[in-house]
Length: 235
Ligand SMILES: [Ca+2]
Ligand SMILES: [Ca+2]
Image (cartoon, rainbow, N blue to C red; front, side, top):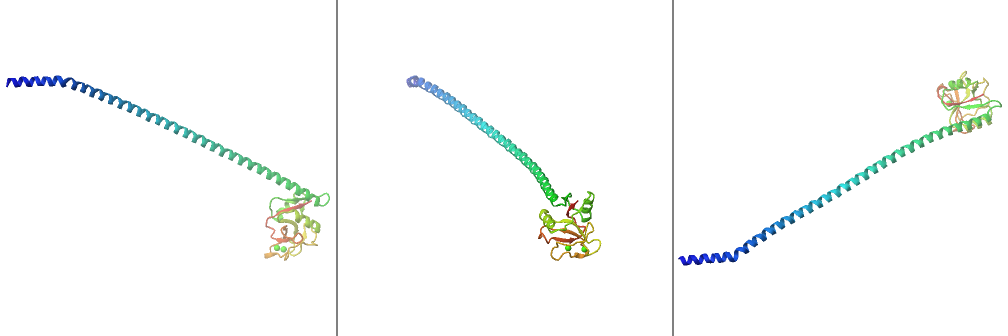
C-alpha cells in the first residue's frame, strides 16, 4: 500500500511537472486574449461613437444650411412682395394722375370746341356733375349765363356730337303745358324731337334733355324737371 501511494505521488508530481507550466501559460494567453478583445471592443465603441457624432454634426450643419436658405428665401419673397406692392401703388398713382390729366385735357378740348360753337364773344360750358333742370339753370345764371339755346341745325348737330350723355338744354313748357319756350322767353320754332316726343309722360314732363345716343337731329325728350342730368351753359 505504501509503495502504491508513493507511485501515485510520483505520477501526480510528474503530471504536475509535465502539464503545470503549460496550463499556466494557457491561462496567461487567455487573459491576454480577453484583454485584447476588451481593447478592441473599446476601440470599436469609440470609433462607432465618433462616427455617430460626425454624422450628427453633418446632419446639424445640413439642417442649419437648409433653415438659413429657407429664411433667405422667405426674406427674398417678402422683399419681392413689398416691391410688387410699391410698384402697384406707384402704377395706381400714375394711373390716377393720367386720368386726371386726361380728364383736364378732355375738358379743355371740349371747352375749346364749345367756344368755337358759341356765339361771337360768348362761350359754352358743359358740366361734369348732375343737377335738376332748375339747379342747372341756376348754376348758369350765377355765372351770368343761361342754359343753352339750340336754334339752328348746325348747333344741334355740333352739340349732339360733343356730349357723351344726356344734357339739359334751355327749353321747357313749365309755364304753360304744351307751349315750349327757350330760357330767353322766345318760342320754339324748330324742334329736334325723338319720335313720339314730347309726350309729357305721366303729366309731369316739362323740361327738355338732349340725348346724344339717338340720331343727331332727333334726340330731344321732355322729362321730369326734378331728374338730374349734366347741362350746358351758354353766355
Ligand atoms: Ca310738359
Ligand atoms: Ca318724354
